[in-house]
Image (tube, rainbow, N blue to C red):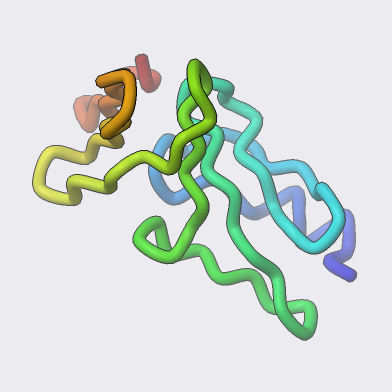
Length: 90
């Protein structure tokens, strides 16, 4: 189990939002992002490419496009883009 102190310093690597614990998974609290990071043996795998990336509209796993810092749903076309210029994700 991840301690609350450790959880407080972790952030979603994609959108920098807080994370919450859902069983054995860390879930991004920013709904448009919603990445889910697996935890095994109390060690979180914080790699976006390994995360589950469910689409908030249809639930399909979104494709990670690292060059564009974006997630795109192959089913409904929903796109989430992280803005690097210090602004919050949209």
